[in-house]
Image (cartoon, rainbow, N blue to C red; front, side, top):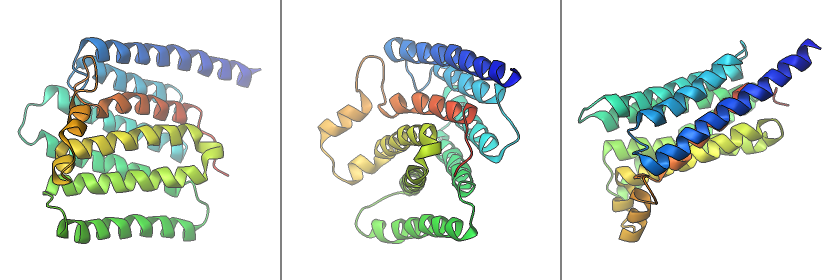
Length: 237
């Protein structure tokens, strides 16, 4: 009976908080600057709160909540910190988020062999990107960092695809966050470095209504799904 009541409580609170977060998200998309709005920060804060309410001392729940807290810190910096180095600071925090996701995927495997293989794939792809891509495309340090963020986000997405039976919420969250990372990389100079058409840049920077950055259309829904993945976390098989 107690477990049933707890499940009902999770459903009710998840629905109420999710509706509130999505409501604020839609409002800020229509009325404000989603990247710098306090309401968008409140959305991420709500995601952290949702994860914290039902947190348990399991590795997966703790790591997902930690990732959300780090994501909230990037929003806080964007909204309140005026600095020429803000893009670099946010990029480093995003690297920390990817590091948390790396550890999260490690716990999805029981054998050390698979963990070593996935880690080797990440390191190998990042090294290839670092040493080979600058030979063909001129990239600065910030653009290289964002390239590695995209690579790790893609690897995390691939790993979760193999565990989608128990990790489907996390997979959907990571898919949106991968799209966020990809759009962000284009915004910090990839699009220009790759000589992409001006129409593509227009889509990235002014997709519709009050949204001035396409990347952030993926960010808050991705964070919400990540919080729900923590709330409804199931053991990986």
